[in-house]
Length: 247
Image (tube, rainbow, N blue to C red; front, top):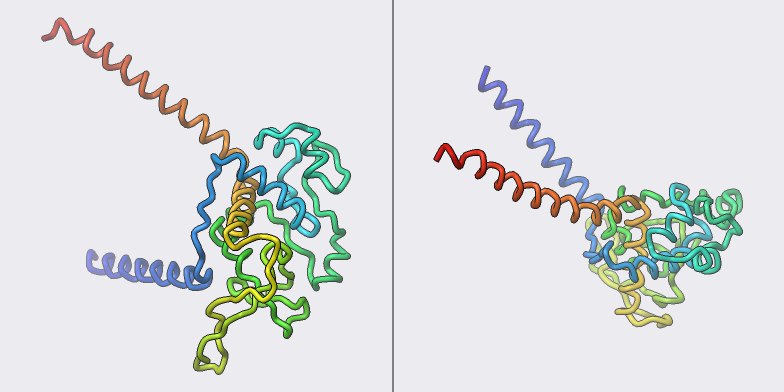
C-alpha cells in the first residue's frame, strides 16, 4: 500500500515538473522588467503611454477612468484631457477608440482586452514583448515578434524604438534560422535606455490595471503589520502582569 502510494506520488511529481518545464519553454526567454508599483511617476507615465499608443485598439474594460485618477494621483481634468480619447465620462470604463469591426478588418481579428494581461502573462512578458518586434516583409502587417511569433499586430511603438532588423543565427534541423538579436536600421525618437524605461512603464501600468486594489492593499498592509506589532507588545505586558504573582 505504501509503495503504491509513493509510486503514484512520484508519477504526479514528475508530471508537474514536466508541465512547469513546458510552460517555461512556451513563454520563451523573458527579460526582467523591474516594475515597481510604488513608483507613482512610472505608473503615470505608463498610463499616458498606454492611452496614446495602445488604447486605440485595446480596451481595459475592467478599469474606470475615475479609478485610474484616484489611484495614480491625477485630477479629473488631467484624466479627461490627457488619458481619455474616446469622449467617455470620468466614470466610464476604458474602451478602445477603434470600433471592433474596423479593427478586425484591419488586423484579421479584434484586438483583445488587456485588463488582465499582466495577471495572465506577467509584467516581464509584456516588457519583453514590447521590445521584441522586428521588421518582417513576409508578414501582412510587416512586423513579427520573437516572443510571440506571427502576432497579428504591428509594432505600436516603432516611432519611439526605431526600426529593428533581425540578426539570424545558424539554421536548425528544420532548416529555419532563429532570430538571435536585433540591429536598429532606423533610429527612433528615444535611445535604447529611454525605450527600456518606456516598456517598463507600460508593463507597470498594465500590472496595476490587472489588480488596482493591489496598491491599496500594500499601503494597508504596513498599518496591519504595525497594529500586530503593537498588539503583540500589549499582549506581552498583559502576560507579564497576569503571571507576576505566580512568580
